Image 1 (tube, rainbow, N blue to C red):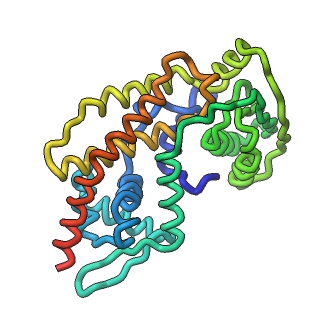
Image 2 (image 1 turned 90 degrees about the horizontal axis):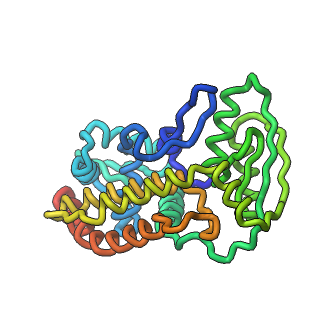
Length: 297
């Protein structure tokens, strides 16, 4: 599984239906955000390339702008340090949090995923097919497998069959199978489907593309008119922007354009993200640096 995945965020994007099946849920309908998810965003945006460290109070002040209490911010720091991404250092009565080498790699991978180029445009029609067999009474295993494969971008048109239009993701499929904690009987195949109408029918069975398109459109509607009035508000809006975007990426299988509906909102949303990030980041970074300087005294 890609190291960029925040398990807590992804699991909150799943629900169990009346048949006991875990299914992808639209980002707009899931529970509220976690302080840890926002902490990772903040570290990647400001600490990573600017000293690789932050004072506790800077983080508390920053997450407060996004709506989190001081207790939640401190717990997020402690939890992230326990995972090996941060290490704390006492400086008098204050605490300085430094990004570890593992944390650096994690945050770089996150930024690369968040601001990657759009979907590949030269898809040749090849599919990666994964056939799985899980005993009916192993419900939890089925849930874990669905979560892992969904994260890897696979869709399931029928029970036990998973597919991806990215044949190169065989390694990710094997990693997903190995991450569920129990052996799963599985077979990987490569296939080709040339009929365009059948391709779109298959996509409609495996993924809820219409719902994802609506979520991208809602993202555009929400942020296109955003006008932060202060440096602090700019930082908060940028954090919300990146958080909402990463939630969309968690639900997006990255289908090639030829498999997407006409007027697909995803590319418009990506362009808006890049434009707002370019315009807002310098102001937000100035706010962060001012806080760091204040708390260093």
